[in-house]
Amino acid sequence: MRSVHINLIRRAVVVVALLVPFTSAIAKNTYYQQFGQKAGIKAVVNRFVGYVLSDRRISHYFATTDIPSLKSALTDQFCQEEGGPCTYTGPSMSSVHRGLGVNEAAFNALVSDLIKGMDRQHVPLDAQNNLLSKLAPMESQIVTR
Image (tube, rainbow, N blue to C red):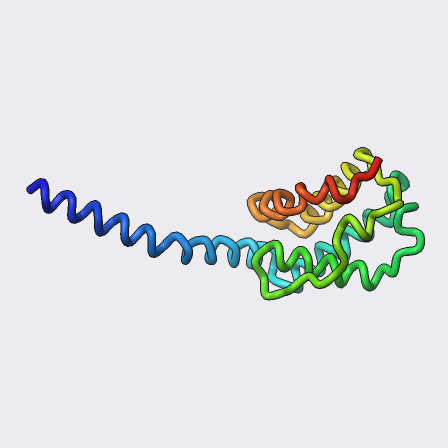
């Protein structure tokens, strides 16, 4: 009886080991789906950038920005981060933000505008949190003061 129990446990471990990569791919794909795929991500980015441009706390940082290029780059970046088929090919965060003097308050305002954009597009909270967890480490490359 004990050997039957051990064999069942071994089989369960093998099954779990085989499923982990598969379930990780499903989870990533699920976040992408929860955003509404690329069209949904593009809609979030459009709202987000609209909020940023009207946000007096941070709009001045974007005064000379090519907005269509920004939206395209953000769409690819968010799509990639949420497990979609996109590839972000833009510059590094540190090179884009070098010399801008972005402080923590400005970064927090930007994040607030992103959350507002995701909320307005009805992105589920777990997908929002996944994206924010991927973007949060970039703070040290963006905040320079």
